[in-house]
Amino acid sequence: MIMDTGSGNTWALHRFCENCNKKSEKLDERNSSTFSFYPAMYDFHYGIGSTYGYNAFDQLCLSKNQSCTKDFSFFLIGYQKDVSSLTVGLVGLSPYWTKASRQDNFILKLKQSGIIDQSVFSFRVDLDNNDTRMTFGGYDLQKYAMKGFPLNWHSINQKAPSWWTLHLNNLSLKRNKNTTHGHLAEIDYYDK
Image (cartoon, rainbow, N blue to C red):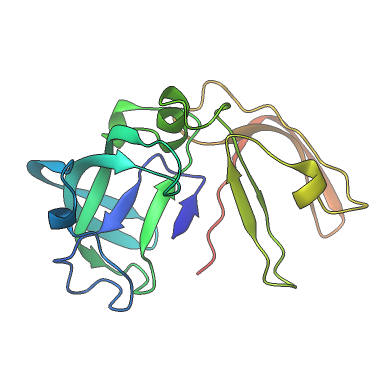
């Protein structure tokens, strides 16, 4: 599953998607009594490829023992082109809802449904120990912060349409520091 900080879209693979990840489970709408869909094809284009499918609606549950959202809208993929065959889905972590996404905002929907208390997520990436963790609705500094390293908080630009965008005051690359004025930086991570 890709956690995408640069998108507001959430999608899953449909059981009919023949060129999708062969080893992953695919959503089978026949197993859900709450599933529905809008019968129109849509496409999303990324820098790495494209996905094609339709808007679907179903419950969204983070775990079996937790309450669920009702009628969560997401994109159900029936075909993909030039997207990694290992991809099993995508969760858009955009801070805002926009009409362009055509779907519910994952984080906001969880908050509106009372599943999480705050519209936030946090993650810790530990590639050395293959121990990456993610939480929704809050953060746990005792459990996930790296000892001896400072935690940096940044305000996001409220005018950005749907991405985690920060004001960029300066940029350092290989010991060269450049001062910028009025620039924004989109926080998006992709690892192929």
